[in-house]
Image (cartoon, rainbow, N blue to C red; front, side):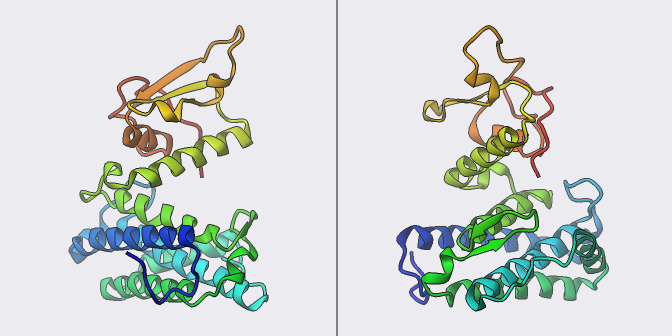
Length: 250
């Protein structure tokens, strides 16, 4: 299924856009099943209610939209003025009336999708700066948003599961997480086994040291269980290493 209105003809990018659109629909379904009085309940993210989470995802769409504008105009438009401003924006958004909060969530997502749809071929390789200061091609913003909508639907804690996330998204997420640990040198010698997926090998710094030092700890489970654990969303479904605390990812 391809959105014929997309200006890009890159088949790989079209697949990525389809995945993020499906994730956005998944996210909206999770939000829409919540009654207004359920928005005040805690999310799975420490210190955030569901209101905070919905405001964050809405404002995230607007922030990524600014990067799309940057690539299309060659005029710098940062995601956020500062980390402090981002946090203030989320806190303020969490106080919106339920109807306004839902409108923010929906309208921001639609606007971002239109901005992607209308972006021609060349700007997709234009390099923009993320909130963490990384310079990435605009195409990376599709993946940035993909992570947001699929994982945060789970964080609403109203029925969505990591196992509902497409396998190819989970694979890329796990690769991202392990890559961040390696880059920051925060992997304490873990050996991570993904059951039923020999093609993923044994991940973690501990897997790369065949010498005298054995991995300090082993984590084992199927792909959803390992991603849930690695992303800080609980390891209760692991078959080994439930007690292991993963390094911070984001």
